[in-house]
Image 1: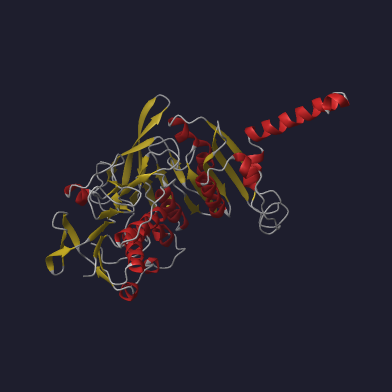
Image 2: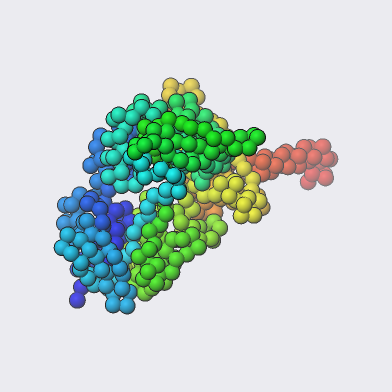
Length: 475
């Protein structure tokens, strides 16, 4: 009998899990179930359609229906799973054909996540949106056609990407963030301040340390009420808005797993091991719903990025189909483009490391992406965080006009391979005026770091002392 593999969820993690399983087991009966009407599309591309950089939402469909047919994957759209019976190995789902019981030998949960909306009074009014699905994107794009002003609640990656899109479309936009900086989980305050300044130069208004208390208007959004912390206490302000985008993060969809008796981890994601197995035999989990381990800290983490989702899904799919591979954790490597500059980060921030009790040293440099005399050379700022005792690299952040992605990828590898500042300082790099500086900025950051400079100064002192000593003493 062919192995029956059922996957709940049919986007980044779900489709990659199915594809990986198919490559291992050509005869398996693989079924994907999603409550949406479209499968296999990129959620990350939605802000860039809103900005007009991508022409249509349909362009975000990475896996068309023909792909599922070619891979012999049974795709069930507009179908909601209501229960998982792990004892009988059944998935109970409700779709256009009514309620059905779908048997499985192996089950993969790629149930994803949903937008978190704070308890803001008036959040149900017309003109309030979240950003998660193609449907969300289409609703926002329709509202943008008439809107003159907008408020984005939240200054994380999605919030800033959508805010930049609104500004590019000529809409007066304000970002309101509860915390004292933009990109609070990605950057340290010093790097976040650079991003904030660049965004404000593009016409985006950013208000920090402020909570949105209420969305005002009769039936439709007209303005918001903010509770802002000032020097002498709190002050209430109102801000006009034709539309409000709530981008205050996402929460893992774990309800099905929890009801089925599957263990939930410390991060409130589904607890998994290195094979992406859950606490129930023959049940795997991957993607935004799955908890994993950060290899730097060895602590559980819920890293809700597309790159993490597909890597976890590949492991889950291979193992569900009879393979034996391991997922080596996630350090959190992310990048984005806002207007004409890029922001990337990997590993721990300086702040996070200190909160975990890790004593760190920091290396920073401001340089150019190409030879400074070459037309089009753009500024780039690099910050590397290293463990003080060993100089081992544990994090990095970069803001630049171009070429941020591959530098962040390189530093991610450096963290994975436990490289030190000395290793980076000794790195051999390439050079051509249209492409790079003679000295790679990452190398310069390491060379100019305090630990490396101390070593150089000590060597210079030893040489100076030897020069002053008699020749016999030197010998």
